[in-house]
Amino acid sequence: EQSFIDEVADAIGVDAVQFRLDLLQNGKENPVGENDYYDIDKLMGVIKLAAEKSGWGNAPQGVFQGFSAYYSHNSYVAEVADVVVEEGVPRVKKMTCAVDCGIVVNPIAALNQIEGGIVDGIGHAMYGDFSFEEGQPQQSNFNQYRMIRMKEAPVVETYFVESLNDPTGLGEPTLPPAGGAIANAIHAATGERMYSQPFVKVKEILG
Image (tube, rainbow, N blue to C red; front, side):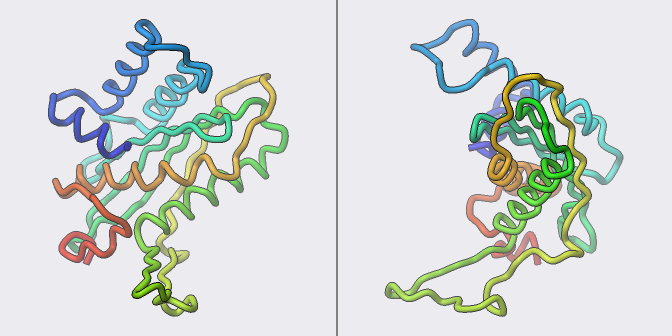
């Protein structure tokens, strides 16, 4: 979904972050039916915060950025992936994450869940490949199932939206958008779109 949004923004020549904000603003001003599912202002808030803290649009030379936003378990998340190309292969160097999860009761536990979710999300998107043949799993142990390694884990910078609202979920929300942000950053770095996971199977891009 987040890669598709970027692809549409690219096709019409609009910045990916601004395109998301424009879509949400239009949904706020011209709603189609009732929206009692999520808070548009909160989603826009994390998008703006992640863009600001990541230096969106002003990355140093050689750093390629990708954006992604997500709503899950009543929490709002936006992530920016910083990718560099080393020896011809894209590498994830940093993830910037903005979160609105209500009041943060235990900051250390919250950071652990956010960072763990992001690293796990990177592992699933980049490396995790579980396959079946004739109904039988082809991987039976971790020597056959590729997981993210410590040296592949990027720096994660997390920013919380200040809030006095009731606390919401953090176990899942930061995992799914990691793959979208990385896919969009890889496109910025290589010009290629990632249409299947894990990305490492695209040998001509990730070696």
